[in-house]
Image (cartoon, rainbow, N blue to C red; front, side, top):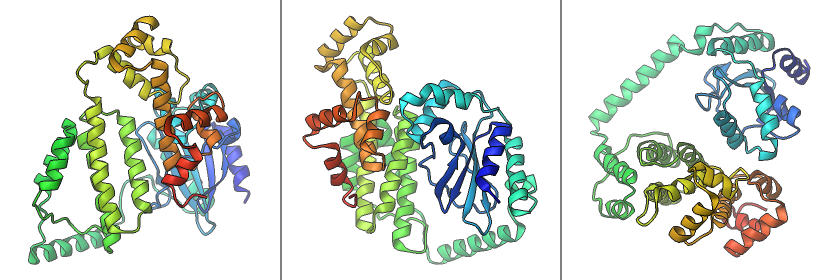
Amino acid sequence: MDYVSMCKNFFAATNIPVSLLKDGQSVYSALGEMLSINTVSHWTIYPPHRNPSFQAFSPDIEYGMVEIEGTGYALILGPAFNVTVTEQIVRQFMRETVVPLDYREQLTNCLCSVPRISHLQFARYLAFFHQCLNHKEADLQDFYTEDEIYTRSRNERQLNAMVDDLENENYHNSYHFELEMYHLIKEGDVAGLKKFLTESKMILKEGKMAPTPLRHTKNIFINATTKAGMLGAIPGGVNVEKVYQLIDLYIQECEQLQTIEEITSLQYMMVIDFCQRVNEMHIPSGISSEVYQCMNFIRTHTNESISVDDVAKHVHRSSSYMMKRFKEELDIHIGAFITRCKLEEAKSLLAYSKKSLAEISSYLCFSSQSYFQNVFKKQYGITPMQYRKKVQPQST
């Protein structure tokens, strides 16, 4: 069967985007073809415990996957929406797929043209593809229920494990330690957190989360990173989208490490980083609420070509007034602060993505790649490529 032709025909008939993967690599993307760019998400498509399966990465942007059994192909249906596509959803999609701002209007038109469908209707499309491609029927209840034999087997394993832990006195005792740590992160108390981590005499007992020590440590790290973000950073005032990005980036970095010592060190750095970001969100003494709002506006719009006028309009002030206040309180011009925030975002993309310099430059709305490289070198003393090789030693 010509799977690409089938995808094209489905998209033409329904206007619901569809993509095709072969051994995890993109073969076809309806949106990518329309925009002439790569819109395949950088998210990992997790192997499902059933086929077909939902692959929802956020409440507003939904995907589904049907594995074409015995072929290595997987059909990805989506993005689909059961709510009206808003500017916020478009921006979220652009960030998640690192789409340059130049395509924003075209992408907005594409996403807004996707018909809204209910979660149930989306499931029916997946069941339809499964029947056509694998010649098997998928009861809609199968999407939400587990096989009885699998459930019984899992319950038996869990019961046996709990009995073994009780007999061997393997009790969890990290609850109060975690409460204190996440409280310090939420308060942005960097000095207090460092002191707490250094002076804690508690010998932590954590449950076994994997068959090997390395995998166990990585799973502990993933759990701790998620909690540090959800229970510490977000309640502490850090932008929700930024927290999710950081969680993803730290987990990706952890997965590349090969020793327990490296993961433990990264975990310490991670909790301190979240705590510092909360601390930075607290309005420092000497900084007005207006200037602070402008700083946050700039930090969350690094992928847009914002101007001094845009920043001033955000707080309903004139450009001249805000430029004066910014300079007085931060000793830096608004334009320079915008550039600095873009460069910080560039460092993250250089460290944790495979995007080319041209893609990063375009995404962050620099006038040209050469200008981006010159500004980066002037700020940090090395070129963007030198920085990437420094933080990604495996890169060539």
